[in-house]
Image 1 (tube, rainbow, N blue to C red):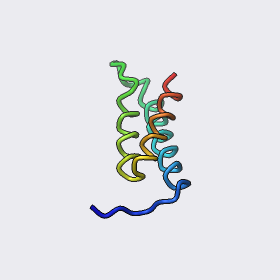
Image 2 (tube, rainbow, N blue to C red):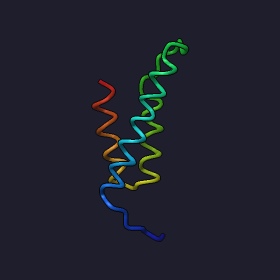
Image 3 (cartoon, helix red, strand yellow):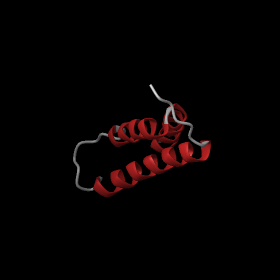
Image 4 (cartoon, helix red, strand yellow):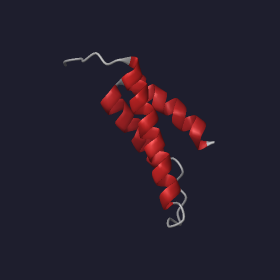
Length: 70
């Protein structure tokens, strides 16, 4: 497996952007959705951040999602 070196700024930027987009979408669709699934989009954001940014980005997205979900 080929590993690419990414800057920490890019990794954390991906994490912040993924979580921000997930929270924005959740807030937009909240009035239309009757079933409460507060973490569903945040799980997707964590997976996307880990896929695009690597382990550091996934960990950062996990921390941000935990803070944002409260």
